[in-house]
Image (tube, rainbow, N blue to C red; front, side, top):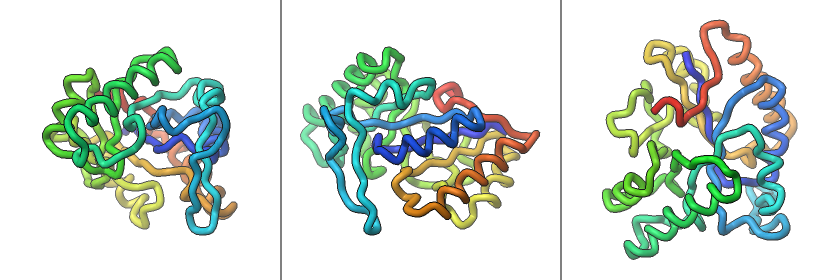
Length: 214
């Protein structure tokens, strides 16, 4: 079975996440919003009494080196609520900027807030993406009926994570997603690393690049 994962929003906790992923040679895709990365770390908020900061623009390349980058829109709006020209700019401009920053093709897209409509899908298709991820979790997740409504298997904190993992072996793909800021204490980080190790040790599974599924 192929294991694919993606993480949203480009925040400082990704540094700790990536340290764990590198220990197990685990592949991952990171969905970024270029507008929200500035000269210094910032554009933050509080999640369950824990401060969340976005990474500085100048550190993105070094932190995400070796990982796949995907489009998450320029500034993380509800795209379907924007005038069509603004939605196009959010999608197309962000893709171009990310390609310039990272020097890699940007093929994937993750819907901000998981929200979209047919007009948004058409923009994403015409912009050159190969898939777009929602936040609706289903089993099996692959192959999707429509790659531009690509529903993952589960969130990484799902209480049914391992039962979904086992059920996904029949389809051959297990796809989980999340935000690293959701791990708010060391116990959660330890549990997460244990999950990564357990998947890594499974001889029936292997890490895979999400975009290469298409």
